[in-house]
Amino acid sequence: MAVGWRGIGFTHKEIVRRMGTLLLSGNEAVALAARDVRVSLGTGYPGTPSTEVLERFSELGGPAQWAPNEKVALEVGLGAAFGGGRVLVTMKHVGVNVAADPLFTAAYTGVTGALVLLAADDPGLHSSQNEQDSRRYAVAAGIPMLEPSDSQEAYDFFREAIAISERWRTVVMLRMTTRVSHSKSRVTPKADAINPPVPHYERDIKGRVMIPAYARMAHHKLRAKIAEMAAWNETSPLNRRVDRGSDLGIIASSISYIHAREAAPQASFLKLGMTYPLPMETIRAFATSVSRCVVIEEGDPYLADALRAEGIAIESKDEMYRFGELNVHRVRRILEHDVSPEPKPVPGKPPQLCNACPHRAVFTALQRMDCIVSGDIGCYTLGVLPPFEAIDSCVCMGASIGVGLGLRHVLPEEEARRVVSVIGDSTFMHSGVPGIIEMVYNPPATGHVVIIVDNGTTAMTGLQEHPGTGRRLDRSEAHGVDFEALLRAIGVPEVHVIDPSERPSKFVKMLQTALDGNTLTVIIARRPCLLALRRMEKEEQAQPCSIGQTQA
Image (cartoon, rainbow, N blue to C red; front, side, top):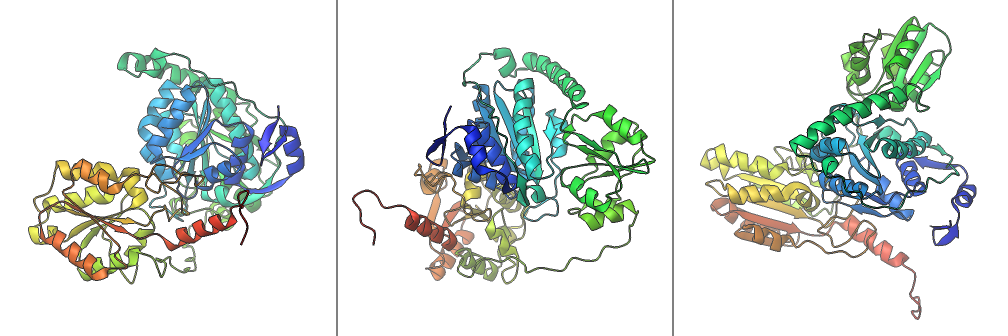
């Protein structure tokens, strides 16, 4: 059957033949695999290092969309998978926290079609607030987990994840890391298309409605599934053994395997591709075949802890290597038991707000007025750095409002009146609305002031759209949420809109009035991001002329 490829009808084999071997990042490889297996829906929330997956999938013609947050994305994906569709849900590691509520129950309900949850971890904190290791989620929730080590495996493992999901009717985690997501390597697409079944709904009340009586049965079924998958994984082609002698054996997965191969080319290797449930007997046989067996892994000692719990004799890294990314040099140090202080990395240029950034006027005012600022996640978080140093806390998406309210509730009045919550427009759509509801429901005695810095884009992760921009992932027109109407409907008595860059003195006066009063106030500091405006201008200029129009 012919499929559309940039407007031209080719069979899948013809497409592969024309493409040949490609140089792709891990994210691009997953997007290509999603296109090749005819994923019915791709949804997620942008977050480095996962963002490019859905963007590339959309460029390849796949049905992709941004959700308001990761929880909603997983719920929408789950519904599509209940309907027999093949689904890809993407997010970064901290997004899994937001999606954890439906994730744990989705392990019980399972799926009718297929659902792959791509979780992209960020060892080394390149663009994140923590070094969370998402592998723990697979174990806690009870879902199988695959870990590719390069772009070819990202492509292959996604296809295998779809097959596993359909075979066992389960959510499957594809765990990526920054280095795998963004590094480029060769990918040869497969010529065999995996055509999906036609989506349809199968009624399964006991399997989908998780009241306690049905959930108890579902838990037993889940554990039986995990046992089946563990047995299958003992001979799975996703794991690979390389024998080069019996002196040193290394067990590794993901990018750690690539580093270890270069650091110790003489070693024997057990490269794990499916890291939950683990193939314990395969691992045990490998460990006993070598004199010394070392586990090399980034982040938490997830593999090492699991193997030791099974009584398998292995060595693991020292605690100092739990932090940051691994590389060839660090792996060599681990193998040599070198725990001497590591050289400090050469400091790079610190990030900063763009010179014409509309957020600058806001943070200039907050600094001069000596406000206590509860901040949030976004490019405006850079207001914590010089010359502003105007943010006092930043915890997670949407936390600015709740933390600010907590401060207002307990601080002496003089200090409480200095507290301001600052949140971006995309973050407000993500998880800021419940905070506003809390503010109206449990108002502090001194009132509260929230500033929404609205630059009309999700700037930090690459200028993506969100429900407030009036555009979808592919830039097509969509309904844009009216912030002012929403805030007033919730019950916020004072809602103001101002361009602080154009009218800085009026903004300062507006903010001071709000701080002095006891009224709940939201100030929308609205001015478009210049980078987003430039991108839109380029896109408009690149649009082909319509029939009947003349080109200037």
